Amino acid sequence: MTAAALDAQPAAATMPRSTPPFSFFEWMVARRYLGATRTGKGVSLISVIAFVGIMLAVAVLIIVMSVMQGFRTKLLDQLLGVNGHVFVQSENPIGGYVALAEKLRAIPGVTEAIPVVQAPVYATSATRETGIIIRGLSRADLLSIDYVTGPEHVVAGSFENFGQGRNGGDEIAIGNRIAFSLGVTAGDPITLISGRGAETAFGPTLRKKTYRIGAVFEVGNSEFDGFIGFMPLEQAQIFFNQGDAVSQIELKVADPERVRMIANPIAAAAPDYGVRTWQQQNASYFNALQTERSVMRLILLLIVAVAALNIVTGLIMLVKDKTRDIAVLRTMGATQGAIMRVFFLSGSLIGVLGTLAGAALGALFVWNIDAIEGFLSALFQTELFPSDIYYFSSVPAEMQAGEVGFIVLWSLAMSVLTTIYPSWRAARLDPVEALRYE
Image 1 (cartoon, rainbow, N blue to C red):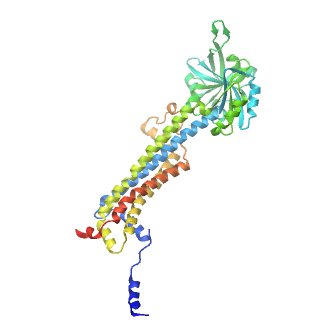
Image 2: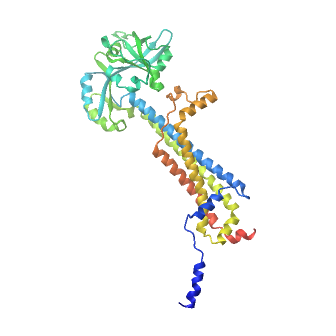
């Protein structure tokens, strides 16, 4: 071995080795920089503010989107659970509805075909009156609607005698809000007045008849509970002077979300009648819900981005406070990449921890939203969620894994992006200039 080789061997042995990216040393320094220091007590406070801002922004976004999704899901479940999915209608009463219903029921994808007589009436009790919508259904068809006849939805009486007796009997069922408005309950009489009586030379006469309330139900939606009553189909045909005909045939399909695919076969099977889907019947309402949901998501995503910008403020102040430390680390052999990664980790830790805490806080709030709403209502002595305004008896909320995942990824992305510039500024700091005035 030559003398030059022997001289070079000790030098190579003493040459410092660079640490790998994101080593323990970089993580340790980044974690220490998040805490308060002797000369920079405000840095820790700004880090806390950035953490809390991201946590609250993520939590609020999850809560709001979960509640809006819960509203849509609950409303859709009730709408499709009580009403049909496809409506076969006509300006005139539909005769021969039994054969037509059987024909429609045979179409693949159709699960039920329900003949319905529907008309508005004026309902009166001994002291009060109100306007409602009466839907005439057969006993079997009504019992298939769990949102009305299910044990958890019957608040008074029962459906045991509904549709029993001559011409369907004289028992009807009404929503609990109708019962409250009229001051009646199961077993009480109620008088219905309709303008669809017998035809005369001067037009149709009024028809008036007293029925007994057999059951009071609660769907949980004020639109159904406050305006809908059910009458046996045969009795409705007589009361509304329909003869052997119905107002419409409501079809239920296996997949309501893809109802448009089955609308054409239904229209082909009933060429003399109009066919409308539930999506067409409620298009404006659900489009408004979707638009509101999209705009709210955009606004709250921007709030998360604004909260993440607090990380920039914290890191810039941290870099200014740690100027001397950066210079010392550089003179000891730390590379620009190592300095950049240290401050990148400092900012990212705030974003990651804030995001995870916000996701946990949002999930806990959604899972206990009814208890929280009840506590706040009692605390402020007011009803924060009036059912007559929001249609539902309780706050609906449904967390979706895809929505929560998107929110978390967005918050993490914003947190990472906001750390790049301050970290780059720290890495480009000249140690000579930094120590000149120390």
